[in-house]
Amino acid sequence: MIKRNTVRENIEAYLYNLPLILIVSVFILFPVLGTLITSLFRDVTFLSSKFIALENFVRLFSDEHFLHSVRFTLLFTIVSVAIELLAGLIFALVLNETLPARAFFRIALLIPWVIPIAISGRIWELLYNYDYGILNYIIISLGFANEPVSWLGTTTGAFFSIVVSDAWKTIPFMSVIILAGLSTISDELYEQSKIDGANLFIRFFKITLPLLKPVLIVALLFRTIDAIRIFDLVYVLTGGGPGGSTTSLSLYAFNYYVSGDFGYGSAVSVVVFILASLLAAFYLKTVNVNR
Amino acid sequence: MKEKHIILILKTIGAVSLALFCLFPFAWMIIISLSGNADFLTEGDLQFTFKNYFEVITYESAHLLDYLRNSLVISLTASVSATLFAGLSAYSVSRLKFKGRILIPLLLLGISMFPQISIVGYLFEMMVNFGWINTYPALIFPYITLTLPLALWIMISYFEQVTKELDEAALADGATRLQVFYKIIIPVSLPGLATSFILSFIFCFNEFLFSLMLTIDHNARTIPVGIALFEGLHGQVPWGQIMASSVIAIIPVLFLIAFFQRYIIGGLTRGSVKG
Image 1 (spheres, one colour):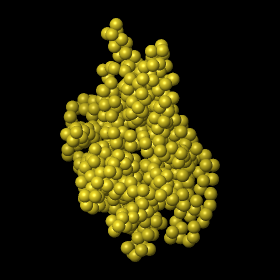
Image 2 (spheres, rainbow over the protein chains, first blue to last red):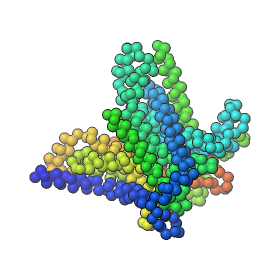
Image 3 (cartoon, chains in turn brown, red):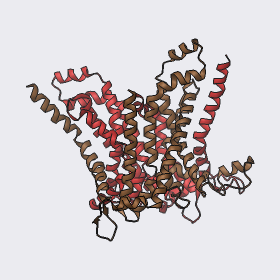
Image 4 (tube, chains in turn brown, red):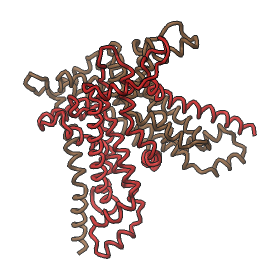
């Protein structure tokens, strides 16, 4: 009797999960497997497809443009995540103090996050505009420069323009996540250490930071994996330029797909996939060790 | 006393700069959308006008309203489906004993970390074979998968909060499990369902790469792609029109954060705080 019940419960449970499992299998697991297999083929439009084993991957290592986009993607990930985490933490600490107009701040924080990246990319494109963008207007008015800066036209300028635009969308989001973590730390801890004579900075490093660690690691994980697959912003803001200097790995793979070279594009995609998996494994291990 | 002052000063500086940082680009978009001359900073005075809005709505070749309709229909269908499917799954995970109980949420967490680029190439070839390129289903199904992980995790955490005595009592009274789900669990966890739906909708509405790759024109293209590729109707980049289109495009999501900010923040933070 008990046995029959468990069997029934098992079957029922799988029925509830059937739609989810079907959709995930067909539209995620299957395509990922397909990408992996395609990466082992010469798969170019108008040519018959041919198995070439790891040739695409061998080609990657001598492909100057690919290696550059690896460097760009990693550098962007490190710089932007570091800035965003730090700024997000600072703003969260500010917001955690009792503030007037909480609803106003909640909405203000969510606005950059909720605007599609493709659209915020265009807003920033206008702010950076060489001839009549307001950034150039401000720096010239304040006397920081005599002539307009070509924000998107130079390698360094384009890199930091992307970092800043990305930070605009992400810092508020980071603050919201970290703020939620802060609100779980009890006030009594702070009161007690105040009585013990600990100042603002000691309280931050001895209480806030250690207790915030789990939240920070989760935020770091999701941000890093998001940053490593950056596509929308570079596509809209710089198109990968100038001279391919801001072509992220995702954009590099996309360009091959668009030109009809699915074999090589898939090989690049597999590299992005491996990078993201390694990061995820690394973070999950860190979280486990900490528990 | 001294420390109190320092905190107050830091707090004020921080709060003001945060508000400026968040809102300035947004405000600038609105200003330019209402200007007749986007170059007014360097050339003459600002001319206030609604012309840009009028133009992008009435020019048929701009297809703004088509893109918006596509986005709304696709995002709504995908987020309702994701909430429904994830809800059924979350119910089984929180109430039934079966082997996939631990595995399914973990699998979905793993999937949420897959880079989209590692899916989209092969997805394109699949959609060509299905004959789905430039149709709604080409985006609806991938969008469901995009939001399933988040929806599942949010709803598991809501369902876990519903006391199990409620459904055990109903089961003892002869209700089936499915009845328990839609007569007890769903009504009690409506905020969870709403949160999952709203966040799913926002993620679908913002999606870019799939739409760029799997659609061709106004018959299925969504609004982020429409605006990214908007080059203007008369040559020169028409910033006024682009910003007016952008304002119109984000009205649905602005509406959501204006009325449901608590749900959104609650949903976003639920997963990360509990680990």
